[in-house]
Length: 173
Image (cartoon, helix red, strand yellow):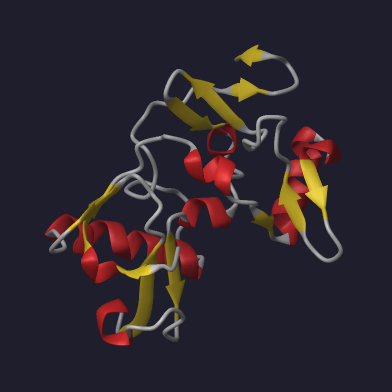
């Protein structure tokens, strides 16, 4: 599906469905790959010709996704090494219009113009006139993450309490 400008979204909240952890391959930046290999081992990643990805389990989910009923928890978030691509999901922040509709995608933040889009396949999107919370808290946080000026997520992640889980120790810590 083609990304849609942020201005069509009333609000967004991660509902921890885990669909993004199954449907998409996560490209890792080199430092992210090194952190994962150092903490969990090289077998938790997948190489390609010129990229590294998070490994998928037999059912197609990310190996770092912990399923608890209908809830999915990212164990990399608890370890503070969640990849930037995962932190940004389902938002796409660009300095030039990447998917058309530049007037609807334009978002002014910190004196700069950004073009912000969302992947419409995300179940946490509520369509409609953007709410003030969405404009003043959620979209700016995604821009800060994209720029690398924010590491810690507050509005841009689920509100489900996280438990520490180690895929190698087979259980919670």
